Image 1 (tube, rainbow, N blue to C red):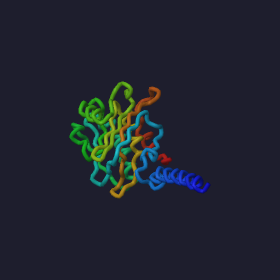
Image 2 (cartoon, helix red, strand yellow):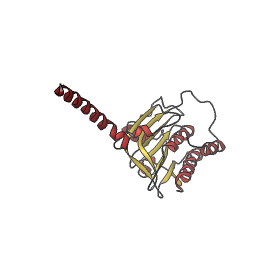
Image 3 (cartoon, helix red, strand yellow):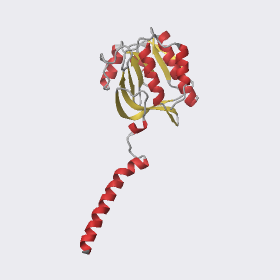
Image 4 (cartoon, helix red, strand yellow):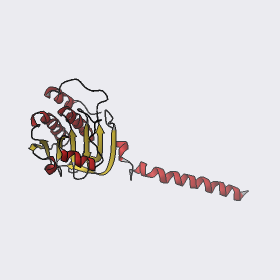
Length: 208
């Protein structure tokens, strides 16, 4: 009888220990999936989680491509304001001829018409296909790169709204978790380019 009871208790104890081993990482935050902490609205169509993070510090710059500066600067200024509000950092916005030369260590707002941008994103699992369309965007972040790319200024603005939600406080300023995103509107928008006033009002909305 006692041997049967001991066997039963041993099985129960083994089950409890197994459960504890599975639950402890989540409870203590050790090696827990970071995806559970990333909530984006609206939810992107495709998300790939990586390891590490891009650090946004006092020397980080925001680059926009020459030829699209007037249109894309709205998105760049929206992002710069978000960084300032969250961290007090004032990031410079600069123009560039070749996105590929400015990718490392900078936040790049690029156009998917640039073959170098498309190739770089494709190598990292983000394809700029017909699904992305005119108003969709691709977003890629790792330890060395932070890129938002789209076919239009509208798409770039949408991508920046997602990036704003990804930024987190860090010892050096802010960080963006390593991630790859492909997203596009569910319905084709027919409205004109978002105005500067609307961009600023969106920027001041409280974060959920």
